[in-house]
Amino acid sequence: MSKDNDIYLVLVQHVKHICYQIRLCLPIGSPQNHVLLLSTACKQIPFLVYCKIIDSSIRLNAMIGKILDVDAIESNRVNLQLENIDMNALTKRIVSSFDKAAAKKEINLSFSPAPATVSVKGDMLYMTEIIENLLSNAIKFSRRKKSVSIEISVCDLYALLRIRDEGPGLTEDDKQKIFQKFQRLSAQPTEGERSTGLGLSIVKKYTELMNGRIWFESEVGTGTSFNLEFPKA
Ligand SMILES: Nc1ncnc2c1ncn2[C@@H]1O[C@H](COP(=O)(O)OP(=O)(O)OP(=O)(O)O)[C@@H](O)[C@H]1O
Ligand SMILES: [Mg+2]
Image (tube, rainbow, N blue to C red):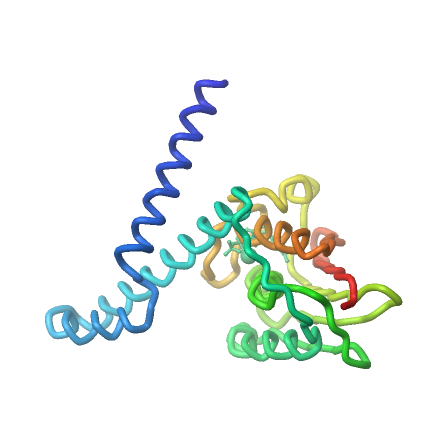
């Protein structure tokens, strides 16, 4: 067991090292690099092949980003830039950015903001990553023509954000593993969307770093609701 564990740790170190090297040497996901690639290589390779290369590079870049996020969290290198975040405004912006993905699956995406402005103290980048992952999950694991709703409410001390879907729900086994790293559980993307199984482990850690709380309610065959609670600023 301890030998297996040693091998695992060496492997993890190796993967992290490769990720850092790739990020340092080749900003593969950056638009500038795509343009450069396009101008130099497009004449020699068919356009469809070029598109596949770009798509793979974006996927690889996203995965590397997540592995590096986990590494930063685990080695306490997350540097929170705290500011007052207007949750209604931020969530509205994020929901709009998912309009296209939802429309593609004919998913009815609705947003109901808190009745008045509510601010929480948090890091804008990490808060965005948290809400984006929960919303992308709700859409990714739902079948066509289902509904996804995002609702913000307020109580004395907290802002509560609830993301509800009519997807497949979580089994008892899923519920045990849902916030662990590299968990692709019983629900599969319904239309070939990306899935690395890292998002929720990052979401939980960022939420807790910002003094928040995350929990879920779910029933197999009915859907899942992920709930976030943050102290009001
Ligand atoms: N709303 C949901 N309904 C049902 N299952 C879900 C839901 N959200 C997550 N899951 C399950 O939990 C797993 C882990 O989710 P997580 O967000 O960590 O990874 P992912 O979405 O697969 O990949 P990514 O790293 O791109 O976020 C998913 O693969 C899926 O099986
Ligand atoms: Mg996810």
